[in-house]
Image 1: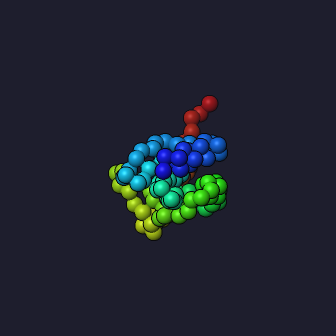
Image 2: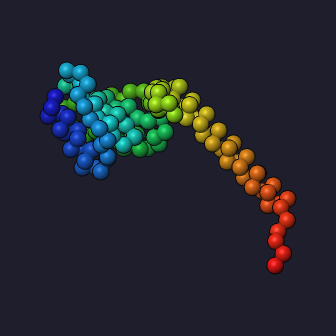
Image 3: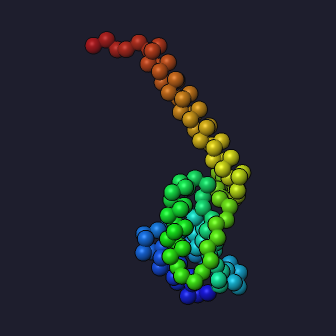
Length: 128
């Protein structure tokens, strides 16, 4: 399995994909936390899990890059996201949380923009 981990790390480095951390998880699993994804390397397969905010084309490119490693099966697992409280949310709930956060950000920006407009419209300027 160590050889497969080395191949995966080399492939990530070859394509300039940043590796943040890696560690042995279980006797038969090695975890690599990389840009936009978590990679779990098992003796005969690699499992990819992408951040819920990752663009589909980016996920596809990363999957194709890892597919270049010969003699290994590639699996895609559920997407994930971390909350503000560092809680891990996976699957459909991760996508719902991302959408909710994006909507809230848009509403906050709109409210702030209206506030600034009101200030500009209702404030008298200085005489020169």
